Image 1 (tube, one colour):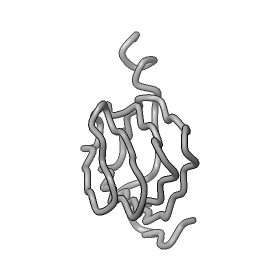
Image 2: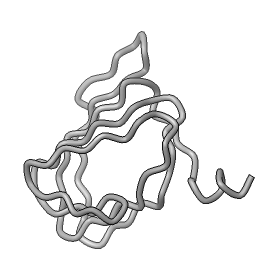
Image 3: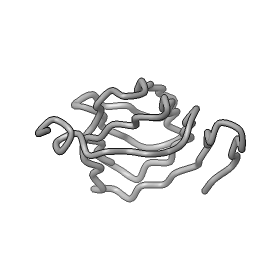
Image 4: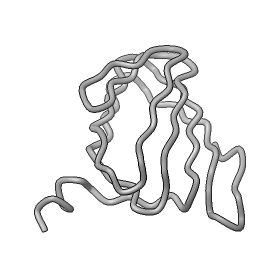
Length: 94
């Protein structure tokens, strides 16, 4: 659910829900920093587990993930620029 969009920068604030078992492959956001606050659940990010109340940051242009929802996860996520992404494995094979 998009909570806010900055029309000038393309930045977004989104509320996300992931069902347990969902995996998001490693990826890169070339145009935005990503800030994530875990509201509930258990989320694994690049091998590190984050639980309710945790915060993590993925800098623009840096590969991160895979993300794995160990339980149902609800997060508040902010992108400070347009939400674009490339698969990290594809980018590394270039």
